[in-house]
Length: 313
Ligand SMILES: [Zn+2]
Image 1: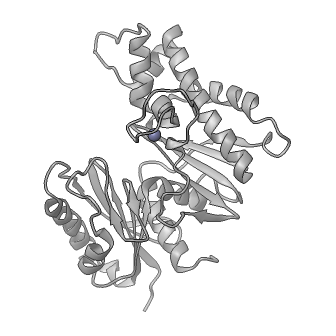
Image 2: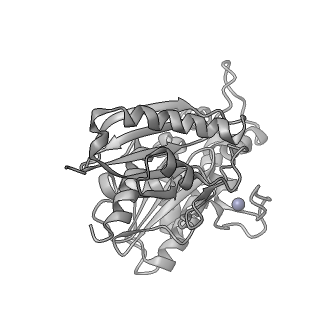
Image 3: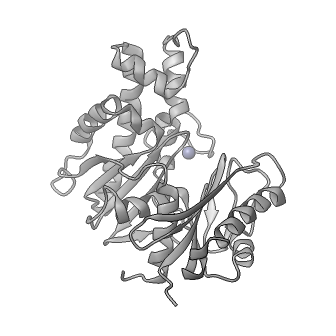
């Protein structure tokens, strides 16, 4: 029997998505449910089980050999548990065991959503063909994943590459993680917006106070908006340049909602990279926008699963 498909789950604070993914990264069947985020842990698991039931009813299910999960973090891949910040009903929740049970005993691989995005970009996107890459998701938070020696580097608990909590300002503001001056504390969408508002930027008549609205203002020449993106870009550049010096990565792939600001973010990011990444072995590092889109979480969960099954693929 052909076993060329893997099942993938992408678990976030707003939706639980599932798919059957073929060897070329195509989604051949899909299911999704909203995440009952504020409900108890068993309600959230029931939504996951519904997604799995829908997938297993697809005729292609017999070709599935394994299942990959990309989950909002923190995750503990070694223990098989997750504690997503936005799903309070799940704390050290034994997701791998529960999913394995619901999926008829298939082997299950768990990674954090940042690692999943890196796996997707390495398989199908901008990080393809590079031996060393840092992939960043700049959104409500800042996450990431690493490719080292041509392979996904997940770390023991599946969280390696979490660039969002690399400290780039030793005397900076307290971060919700408990540290201070983290990349995320400066470069996440909500922090870009809060800094612009504190600097005197006024939202337009529609009242939109998002980072996307700040980006539109920056594009229109608003100095405070431009400065807020500039600071976010410098924080990202400091994190990327430090990673490059440590691990000799060749490329940094930047995705997530904030990256949709385009040149408002990428132009100051490249300028700051020229300032921070100065040594011969990091100077040529390339900054690229992510290529995988809304399905990155599913494609990445499938990629991480395939890599776990066949490390030398
Ligand atoms: Zn932090």
